[in-house]
Each structure stands twice: as C-alpha cells, then as structure tokens.
Amino acid sequence: MDTYKRTINELQRGIEKNTSEVHLCLRKLGEYLSYQKAGALATPEMKELHKRIQDLRHQLPESRQLVKKILQSVTRSEELEREIRNRKARIAELAERNQEICEAIGRAAYTAYKSLKAPREEYRELFEPLRRQEQELEELEAEYDELQAHTKEGKFFRIFRETGRSLFLKGILSLRRKAVGKSFHEVGRRFCNSELDPELKAGGLREALAPYEANEKTIDTLHRETGKLGEDKERMWNELKTLGADKSHQKRVREIETEIQRIEGQLHDAFEALGSLFRGTRSGGYTDVEASSIVKQIEEIELQNRKNRKQIERLKAAMRIDSIRDQLGNVADRISKLEADIESRQREIDTLRVQLSEGQKEIQQLQKVRGSEQTLLQYPKGAAQGEKS
Image (cartoon, rainbow, N blue to C red; front, top):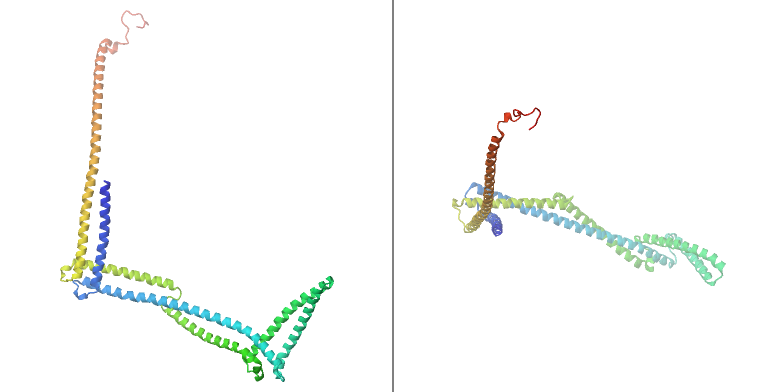
C-alpha cells in the first residue's frame, strides 16, 4: 500500500511538472507566432491576440526606459549635490584661509609703513592706532616678564603679591594680543582690494597679497561652478518632476516596475492563449516547421500525462482492491463471530426450553396435589373451629 502511494505521488509530481512544461511550450509557441505576420494566422481571434501582443510589447521598452531615465537623473542629481557640497566646503576653507592671510597682510603692510620716510596721511591715520596698540602690548609684556623674573628670586610675600599681578597681566595680554591681531586683520582686509602705494609694494606687501588674490580668484571660479551645478541640478529636478519622481523616486520606480510585471504577465497570458488557439486550429492551413515541432513536443508531454493518469487510476484501483479485501476479511471475521455467538445462543435457548418444559410438567403434578384453588381456604368437615391445619 505504501509503495502504491509513493508511486502515485511520484506520478502526480510528474504530471504537475509536465503541465507546467505544457504551459511554457504554449507560451513559447505563442511568442514564436507573435513574431510572424498576422495575415498568416487562421482566425480573427488569433489575429486580434497578435495585435494585442504587439501593443503590450511596445509598452515594455517605454516603461523600462522610463525607469532607466529616472535612475540616471537621480544618480546625476546626487553627483551634482556632492559636487556642490565639495565646492562650498572648498569656498569656506579658502575664505577661512584668507582671514588668516588678511592678518599677515596687515602685519606686512604695517612693516612696510614703518619703513616709509614720508607716508601719506591716510596711511598715518590707519597705522598710528596700531603703533599705539603695539607699544601698549610691548609695555605689558615687559612688565609681565619683569614680574616673572622677580617671582623666581624668592621672598614669599613679594612672590604672593606679584603672582596676583602676574595672573592679571597674563589675562590682559591675551586680550590685547587678540585685539592687535584683529586690528592687523582689519588693516589687511582694507589692503586686499585697494590700490597699493608704490612704496608699500616695494616693501613686500605685493608678495603678501599674492596668496589672498589667488584664493579670491579660486573662490570666484568655485562660485561660478557652484552656480552652474545648481542650474544643472534644477534641470535634473524638473526632469524628475516631469517623470513623476520628484517626491520619491523609489516609489515611482516601484510603480513602474509593478506596471512592467503586469505587462509581462499579460504578455505571457497572451502568448499562451495564442499558442492554444493555434494548436486547436492547425487545420486552417498554416504550416511551419518550428511551430509544428513545438506542438509535437506538447502532444508528447500530454501523452505522457495521460499515461501517468492511467497508471494512477490502476494504482488507485489496486489500492481499492486491497482496501475492500481488508474490509471483506473483517466482515468474514465478524460473520464467524456472529455465527459462533448464534450457536451459543441457540444452545442456551435449547437449555431454557428444557427448563421450561420440566417446569410445566412439575406444575401439572402439583396442580393434582393442590386441587381446586377455590377450596384451598375452606376447612375440612369435622375440623374444630379455629383449628389451623
């Protein structure tokens, strides 16, 4: 029985596999026919299917091209965004570097100014506050250095007093140095985009300005490039908007891919339907070696399936025979048991009948002794009243 079941399961799996193969062959047949001329097909239904397949086939490249265009636009947009960020970062880096260069230019301009014998009045107004700041800073530094020297000499109370003053001066010096640096930066910034006095140029300021001007030129170039990249990114965004992918390109791509799957599914169904129609109308006069070969392959597979089904029927019949035989064996056993039970019951009945007959005979004998029931309670004549017998 188990062997029969295993064989049936194997045959059933073979049928399922063959059935899938038939569907594939029908699709293959329909796809092959779809590339042939519609006029050679036998029926209007086949021609209509042929036209539908062409329409569906035309939709696929458009959908796939749409996905490709969206992904390319997104990739390019991301590249543009990275390039824009890189250029902005470079601009910020150069601008920060120029801030540092401005202070160096200010110091270089101040040095050049100090070397002038008769500087212009505008330079005097610009640099004299710096000279005063520098002198104040030098005085504070000298005082701080003197306090530090005294501290090293000893004497506790003097050290205590001068250490407090030293800490105060240290804080003031830090603030003044920052202020002087800021002043040099402001002076340098004013010189960066102004015409230079020939004497200042000769003093080395021209060389100090060169890195700043080179950076500014690079910054201008980067700004132009950033603007151009921004325009390109805007075009990419407009293109994505036109494609319906400006909000979420992933969602739009999924929608198109779902549509592609739907079209492909319809194509497969149409191929199979066309193949089935062709197979049923081959007598229409259409002859083709490739198509006939596919049809022959389908017929061979279906023939094998019929054999498999027939074999399954035989196996199921054998299983049913075995099952009925098992049932009949059980029935025979039951009959034997019932027959044995009947024999036992019959013997019991015979015994009871003998008992019944003997009982009836004894009743008859006792009835003779008893006599009439009506006189059982009467006293015999001559017996004393109240005497019990």
